[in-house]
Amino acid sequence: MFVFILKRVLMAIPIMFVIIALAFFLMRAAPGGPFTSERKLPPEVEANIRAAYDLDKSLPEQFIIYVSKVVRGDFGPSFKYKDFTVNELIARGAPVSLKLGLWAMTLALCIGIPLGTLAALRQNQPTDYSVMAVAMVGITVPPFVVAPLLTLFFGVYWKLLPVAGWNDGALPNMILPVTALSLPYIAYISRLTRGGMIEVLRSNYVRTARAKGLPESVVVRRHAMRAGLMPLVSYLAPALAGIVTGSVVIEQIFNLPGIGRYFVIGALQRDYTLVMGVIILYSALIITLNLISDVIYSVLDPKVKLN
Image (cartoon, rainbow, N blue to C red; front, side):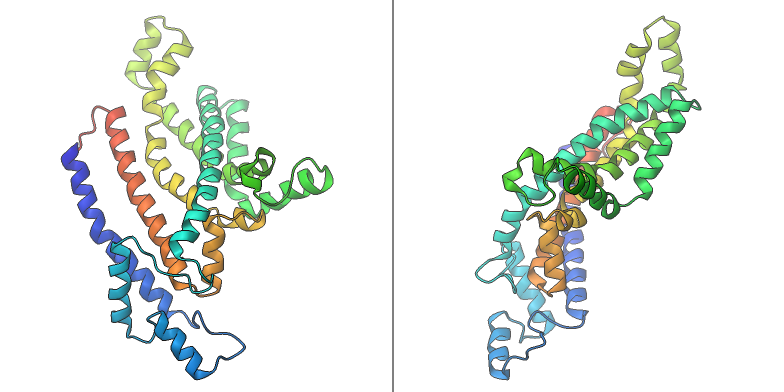
């Protein structure tokens, strides 16, 4: 297993380099720049600013300078947030996005797995159809539609919960964004769980367990659940990375100071270093969580060998 992990880590280095290169040159290819505005700066002032941020150099030189800083863990200064580095902004936004994403994924697992299992045990029955209908609605209705509706009813009409703000992660402020963020993942998890459980419940070893007279709860919990959740393990790695760093719409709607909000503002204002920092963080999360997913997959399924 150590050799497998070492190989994956070594493979991740050129992958990260390609991601950084693509993001860097695509950002520079976009029209406009971090210091382009309606009010033109005096040429000498703009020249000094560009020199201070190494923007007066050629693109290959800028790329080499940037990569040399990233290797040292320095994402550089933010072009738009004065007196802040990208590292500081990510450090401020990461705990918010991490807490929001982990709670949303926890809620999705706690609801999606039981719903999917119930649908598999009641296949082609009204319970199955109801669960899958709700799951399809959760998949097709995007969060930017669900979030305003939750805000409208629970915040404006009924005045039960706050509609914006973080308040240091207080529970009332988290309920609406966590719910809105978790709904699509609940739908996906329930569908994956249902598909995996249906396949496993038809397998020979589950039939043998039932023939031995084991209670249905024991058959499902001890024999079917472990193999039935295998497709979910592969899905959770990119899903967790996406839910942590990709809650852009939710953070905007509920005015949360997370990474997603910084990413949107940075993209709109051409804050190159801030956008690059978030992209690198997201890519690293994807690669790391996929590696963890493969290791967990091999532990759960003895037939899978890490070569």
